[in-house]
Image (cartoon, rainbow, N blue to C red):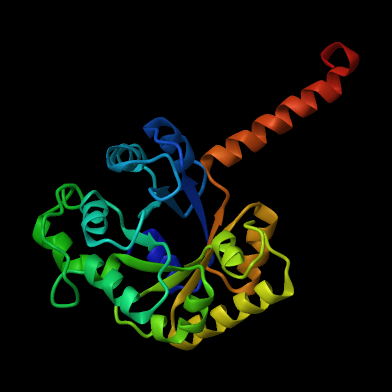
Length: 259
């Protein structure tokens, strides 16, 4: 059976993705109860390592979300380990060419489709290993990040690589690569045109597109545009935002005694 996320994507649904920068099983457990369709452990820019990733997965196990990981780089050793640890999808930064996309897919998939080494130490612990291995290639989501002009120029070739399920846009790095400031919820016409081009290419190749967003309003707008995997900030950002709003509202309501 496909994961919750893959089943929804295949049905044409848009999905809300949580993002874990905090290396804590407890905060992961809290996030997993908040209604996300999937939750991603960020091992690139988050304060996560492999052990904290496993702890986050263990904490989220009881909840109906699909666990994903953003790996630090396109390197088969860490890709294989996060999959063995229970990730059902890999988001990989800075994939700029078809050759790099092919290397990512090969690291994620078992032979004959790829070169992933056997050893799903945790991924298969809730069933027979042979059952996991017989379905993993069909269930694992392989998601290269599109973050540079080179990747934009090569999008059709990247999406043509066997095993690639979709793409994930990193707006901050994309802006940097185009000489713009690194922000998430972008309004520049050139960027919005690029989003349209990438979505059109995904549609042509039968693949999905995801994007990182700073706010719920922008995520909803991107869903309406056609993105199917929309992240809202991350756990630390959402916590800080809620805390600031609570402090500000309290000071405002209390008046002079709190200011």
